[in-house]
Amino acid sequence: MTIGFIGGSGIYDALPLEDTRNVDVETPFGKPSAPLTVGEFGDTGREVVFVPRHGPDHARSPTTLPYRANVFALKQMGVTHVLASNAVGSLREDLPPQTLVIPDQIYDRTKHRDLTFFDEDVVVHQPFADPYCAELNEVLADAAESATDADVVRGGTYVCIEGPQYSTRAESEFYREQGWDVIGMTTIPEAKLAREAEMAYATVTGVTDYDVWKADSEVTLDEVLANAAENETAIKETVEAAIRALPEDHECACHTSLAGTINTPDEAIPD
Ligand code: ADE
Image (cartoon, rainbow, N blue to C red; front, side):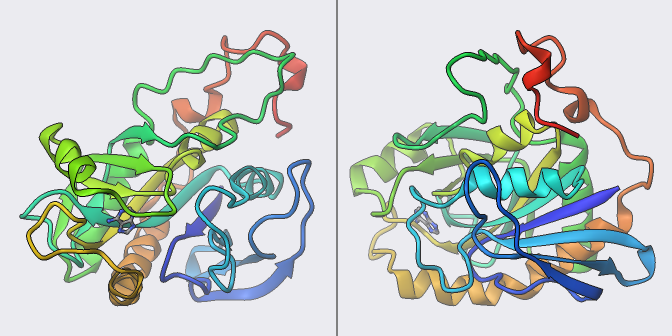
């Protein structure tokens, strides 16, 4: 088992890993956001491959991040399970900043992203009804509850907007009316690509703000980054506990999710 960790805003360095090396990879989709950090996680003997989604200096917009290169690079390194983190706004009064939410649904409002690894000659219609790995979600939520002091919410819908601007008040109120829970800019296309790459994928999101539906809430980058930094410890504790808890022989439907969905099996992403 090799575990990937895609760190969101506020997570720019790897977990405490031993025997680390930096791997500068190239993929058919270009370079990932940063060289990969590869190392062994403590006494587990598990190999972990870390990539900070936004790169070391957070210099790219959520539209132009190299999602395909990041996911492809993890696959190339033999990753079977991907744990991610995302900074999100809250769409609920009872999810204040610094709450951890492990979402189980996504509403995709992105508009300008490459959503697939496959080109026009290979049509792949994959099931995506449950966009995150349900089993990995359980592991993450248990880890968050046992290893952190944060309030943890199991399940919820992440509405993914294109950005880079935050929402208007009308949009934010609409999302609330739908009963959605958190809002961010980066879980799409990452979750779709991980499914295409047959890797189990789940994310721990850290709430950084109340979005703009709430009276007097404007959402500023400063507020988001300050709370993302506050969430850093709890997110890392969660991911570390999840890495320890994952059963060594864990296999799930995500690992064979291309079966029956692709018309030219040779085109599947190599193991
Ligand atoms: N990331 C963090 N907070 C956000 C918000 N309110 N909207 C979109 N993305 C976010």
